[in-house]
Length: 278
Length: 278
Image (cartoon, rainbow over all chains, first blue to last red):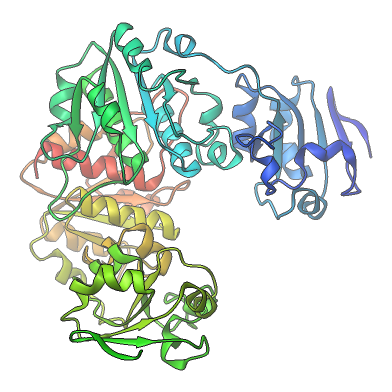
């Protein structure tokens, strides 16, 4: 069964869960599969057909796929010219290798390319998100999905953020963590000044009722470059980051409520930015 | 150690995990703890201090709390006049009873009061959310949190929705599933007509690029009553529900992206409604 069953696509059947050719997909729940940890192997993993397609379209070039026959059929067109092996296995063999049942049925693996720099991602950008202390992979993934959907050009990471390339973040982002350019600040919060030097107006999101409303602030910034700063749920942005910003901005909240999820708050800011004209 | 240690508050120490007085909190991960299932015991469980406080403020009157000494101190003022027992235990005993380690440290339990009806929740409402096929507890909880934060008065459930009183939904809602009034439609989608008879304009959210934008539609509805209809992520609203609506409404999306999470899409609609004036 092994061999070039799909034209130029290299399909290789994996019958033995111990086969070392699928070691890049082994024990995905173990801590050394956290690319953000010192023990991590650094591989970026895409789960499911849609995320695999987005990985193929990204700068994260996959070097192998591992999946079922059914997902191979769904991905055949995308993989035709990719020049990477597709390790084909049953759902049962996959579960033994991966360490859990994966109902998305296919995985892609990519090594990490060199990180982009802040100047890299600012080039041509008009709207960016700047995150501080967002250490939850699910929130991080949601922010990338919202950024992509609502027209944000890049994401900058300040202090204390989780790795957007961790499997869970990539999955929740629907693969947009691979497509929206991001870079880590080298010096935090001093790098906020370099954003300003690049023409960005820095808006710090806060639940503080004394801040200006999102609609009022964005309305005055049509045609200007904007950076939306959001902090972790709970503590929010540090006072240092707040002070380094140009304006403090709030979402008008109903009486008796305090806050929204950080990814939701970011989505409202991105939406208002697009609505007010960028 | 048992007895009235906190004024009128009835604090009862639980030293033995087998103590039957905490049976309402036992094995919370088991399927019969799903109040939405036929086997479920129907109890509504609040997790953590904030959600416990919101349960105390809601129509879901707790009949018991189970938690650590630390959380008792945090809740003492709220519980002073509640007239319900606080079963106090170590984190270890709690974990044995509950079936997992609970880092929120306190649980409240309430029996279900009679369900509200659609006419009940429409009384006085100007903005409502109508859900169809939202069968994910996390999305449901997020929708309630967003509804509360952004000024939505009530939630109506059409066909195929999960139970907003399941523990996970209540937790993700930050307790707002207990506070925002909700009711299930008796006939779906026929009940949409009764919303219209009550003066609501029905807006069906869709990714269809031919639909009108959120901003355009809401702008024309200031001062009128509005119902925002959202469907499950993926399939979206059924064609039947679409046809029963007054307008199809879309969120302007960036090129190359398709959709947002259902709770995020709902949040944007709620935000725009509040922004355009209700």
